[in-house]
Image (tube, rainbow, N blue to C red; front, side, top):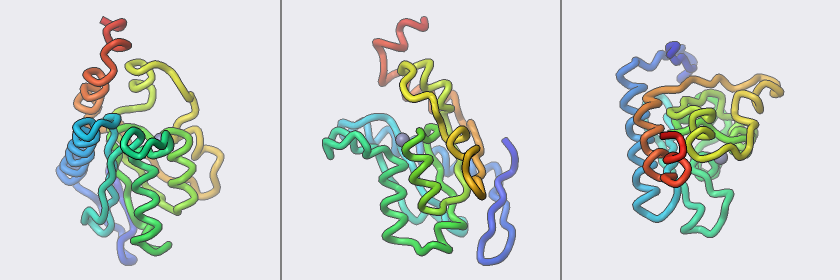
Length: 173
Ligand SMILES: [Zn+2]
């Protein structure tokens, strides 16, 4: 994966590979927590100036709201907790590449850097193709398009989906 570089308080800051892996592992933990809570295996967090400032899980079942993807929940929190400038230099780490809905929300929130674990292509292979318009496709049409990095730890991220969507994944074996 290319080195992630973001502006932080006016300085260019590079996250180390160790930092990236550690942050992605936390996103995967949040995805596991989502499943334990009865939801789908997706987790996300937002990093500002090298520190995690908020974490979010998928809550589609517990909220009875199919738009409550982990990234949507992270974006909503970021709009309440961070100002526009802070959101602009934030990085969203997510266990799986954002869908079209979440990519749009990220864009409108002004979050300019996204790192994902499992690619949308891999998720489609495991869980069944649903909405073939993923983050990079959405951002291709954007002015000042956010930077997207990934996949990162894709095998670990995909394993969560393989165990969660067994009826579909068994067809691949
Ligand atoms: Zn989504």
